[in-house]
Length: 280
Image 1 (cartoon, helix red, strand yellow):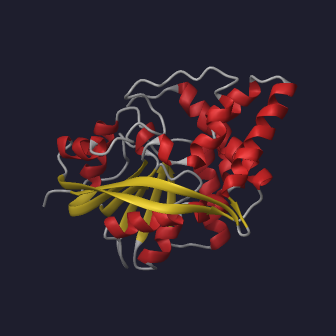
Image 2: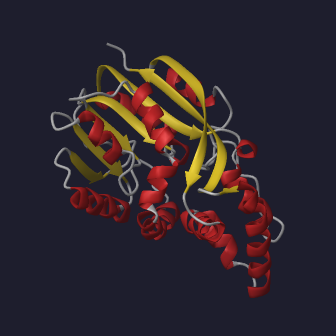
């Protein structure tokens, strides 16, 4: 198990912001959650593992699908995220959901425990994704399904690039190494699918999910949400002078208005849904 303290610290700092915007994040990425439910063949009575659950999603949405006869366990390596997920669970009085601090490559569960395992935008940040996939497969029941959601190319996702491209004019932004933890680590079609096969999964497949990221908020409030959600953006913004920050915000709000509608923000999005089966 590899642990980078800087990464843990960054996500710990981010946890209060993800909890603050939890409901909006749930709504924005509901189509991705639905795709994971479909490709994971998740249904009533199933036991499901949500890896990198953050403040409790998609675990809590999946809990409604599996019902009282099923169970969902969400794991995350960040205690602050797990605490936020627990608060969300308590607020909704869910009885079939549990949250645990754990790493994807060292799961505290017996083999053959879960009918399905999912992760929504988590696998890109695993220190060793192939080892984590093998560990997730270990805890799936024979014939169990694994479904993973990762971002497609950055240029196809203005949710990311509208603000980041403007910031890049003011702050150096080195291109990450091909296999460094990054939101677009598995953006190239086939890359994650091939890894699933190499890890021992059966019949790995991939599909492109095209949808709209909908956020019923103003342009200004989206700017705040986007900057608070992203550790990279927050760090870059902290490097700006007051004058630079004012200019970056002005340019960002102007660019974001292209995606503003009478119902709030709407961004075209492209996500890869990669799935496979554990051998029987």
